[in-house]
Amino acid sequence: MKLRTTVQLSSAISTIQKKPPLKREDSFLKRFSTRQIPESQETLDTGEGEGDAADDKDSSGRRRRRPRRPQKPPKTVVNPDENFYYYWLMLLSGCVLYNLWTLIVRQSLPELQAVAPAAWLACDGFTDLVFFLDVAVQFRTGYLEQGLMVYNSKKLAGHYLKSKSFVLDLLALLPLDLLQVNLGSNPMLRFPRFLKIYRVYNYYYMVESRTVYPNLWRVLNLIHILLILAHWFGCFYYLLSEAEGFQGDWVYPYRPGEYATLTRKYLGSLYWSTLTLTTIGDLPTPETNAE
Image (cartoon, rainbow, N blue to C red; front, side):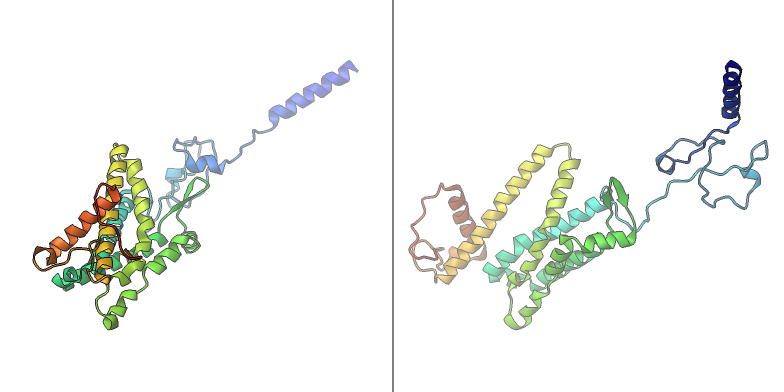
């Protein structure tokens, strides 16, 4: 029995020693590894260097395959972490803020629209062009899937078409401003452009993550929100005063002279809006339901 056990153990040991070591090809590690792969390790065949067999053989004559090169993303795909996307959002945010600041004041003060109608038309057309190009940019913007950036064209298009951004972008490009041909000058018909404000939020968070002064950036953003609220409420105040026929103590004091100029109309309305928002003004009591 001892002899039989000794023979079995010796045969098992010799079998293990003769068995070649297992070589497992780990494609995940090879794909993301940056170190050089040893010659004895198998690599994936990329089809490179097939015509130059002498360079692919070592001293023993064995065929050696070159390591796989990392795949470069297509140049037409926009990486959301690169500078191009950052500057594009900056331009887009400027166009959105242009509509937010100018449309309401041009609607409430027609004199401002009449000062340079060709310039306003050119600016409106430029912003519409930027909004249209933004749709093409979002069709080619990469996104993360399970921690990896997706560059496949079909996946990028499908991801954008299924998102809420696509619906908002389509609604933002509604050509309602063409109704001005029959209705006359009404800049607020371009109000669907306000739906692009979600891109401004994207730019805000991107700047907040890049800047070394995030608190200063938040303060500036808060000041801007307060200013644009005062701007809108001042324009609403003048529109309401105009609807009331400028009758009463609560409405804008429209009378010949300085109060009839374009600058005084805007500054007077902005002054009323600022006093009302800060609750420090001793303003007259409203007399009608609309007021």
